[in-house]
Image 1 (cartoon, rainbow, N blue to C red):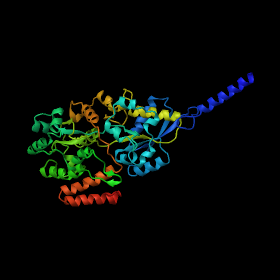
Image 2 (image 1 turned 90 degrees about the vertical axis):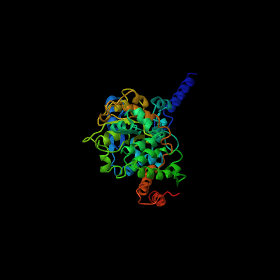
Image 3 (image 1 turned 135 degrees about the vertical axis):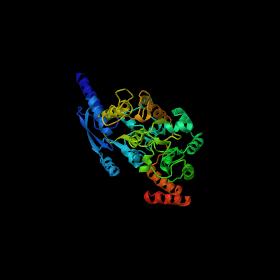
Image 4 (image 1 turned 180 degrees about the vertical axis):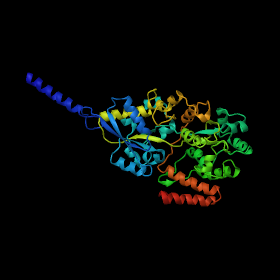
Length: 438
């Protein structure tokens, strides 16, 4: 009897031992925890500074890290090659490449956040901007990435022009003045007073491009031109011919920058926070105007740095370490989380910035020198929360096709081509450069 009991105990011990060697992912069981090197693929250096902050404040995190700054010129190819070989544990995807690495073939390299152990409740509690949740989903609808910042657009307007034309510079009133219901009357009033509403055709497209709600540029591997996009040819022509947008220049040239100064005759610019700080501010210091921030007529975004995790086999302890890091970076709404530190300008090399969480934005304030006493976080938090629908139709070739489109719109508006010729040339360019036809 004693032998039987002893034999049974051995069998039970063996079963328990082998059961303990398994995990849900059938990955190699954990060995005694050893610090590992987290390999990071960078587009810009902000993520490097954030991870260093995390390690400094979480000495038991279980890893050190190796940052790899990819050359901007060869970023796409370098990132693709390194993801194929499994070189990176986490990596940054710039907004220009969302279409491929989050919505296209490159999404296969990204691990769904749910597989890290991140729950829907954690995401809901942070009140992440709807447009970021849409952009962050792969073709299967799984969340695989989130932006470090919110790059939602508000409207930066000249307070002196607002007082001259509308007798007030109050942000809520100006929001109403340039709302879709009142925009036509307001831009006509600006024109009568000698001011343009926007500085260029490109700015008009930047404001309008994300308002398409039916389909992306590509449907069933065919080029799809939505009626809204087609009508933009005539909208841009009307704005241009009527003087509602400036006619002498395009985005990113010297004359365009001059319009950011007090001597300029443009009422406002579409402006994510980075644009206010690093474009309007830096290009107007010799002749600064006073600016206000309000809601734009249409919801749109401009820019982004999405953080993704490489979808490769890893131990439970490494998965847990990455889950904790991603949570701190993108979901933690506490005063010690990365988002609060970013919003308060407490991270080296990162200035005050908008973040994905409305909770964090509501709990912080930011007063830029151009905007006086206005807490502009209030406007950006509102715009971010009202971004439902943005990103739903984002396709793999969104940026490339949009660039080809606005190039032909500009040619038509400026009288270089007929509308029919511009449309035909657009289709030809998409077929030639991207390989997609109607």
